Image 1 (cartoon, rainbow, N blue to C red):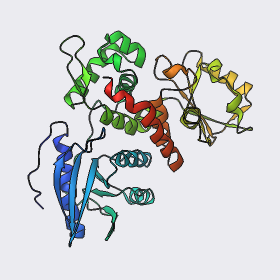
Image 2: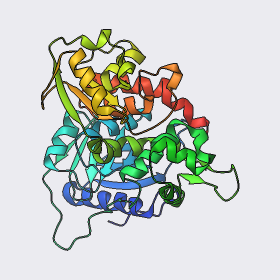
Image 3: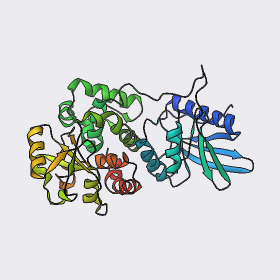
Image 4: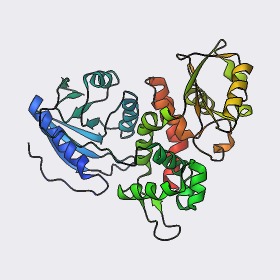
Length: 363
């Protein structure tokens, strides 16, 4: 299928546009549904901007979708994609290089409509229902772009992106301040900015104080997608079980040089989430001593399947909103979306709207 010409936009990589065209061609091959690209990165009059708007023709039915183009590496990413699509308040569609059978089932469970470059699809609208799964790439067929950037998804880059998103003023700070905040090598910072600039996320940098973020929301989405896959597993995770499920309510976590993340942090910020799991970020300085104290004081026991997860702090930033007991809201948001719990996703949306979106205008 040859899709009609469409506007080019340098902020959307060409490989992503190619993937969208391939996915529409594959959809026609497996279902007969004709799709066309209406607009690339349209302005919908909101802070959220999708990658594209497409229109599908099924007999006399015309169905329009806003599109997010993503690589799906794990189930946790689907919840984050669902949140992004819901920002647009219009029918949303995930476009990916490949959606496995298991991922397709999870997308259907969460009502995330999708198409991929192999012809797999889940579409549901009045007068329309399509479910195709299990389609595999043909031999020697080019199947979409990998959308892998060499530096964007590394733990080092994710640390740097995190502090820049949490503290926009660091964007034009001396490199040594960014180094201190992110805990990365000084020489890595220039490469991170080079990558962000090359991919259209930042501009400036040649003159003092002129660097700014162009696509903050999109960068937040990328960070939240990559964090549970690339950085979180590197934070020396350890699990425990507590005999008293409410033990955390009476604890001043800062006495262990630690902060609440995940559901507990969300409960303290939003006030209506009853945590089933406990996430704690512990600073590296005297980490073993502080962890031992916390375990003994609160009668915790090691348990690989325990509801308590302890990870290492990977940033050095002042407390947000004078809450030294809670990790930055961006990390709370990421922790919640990394779960498959719909109640967590609803709370994540509230935290994003109340505590993260406001930063979009501060860089």
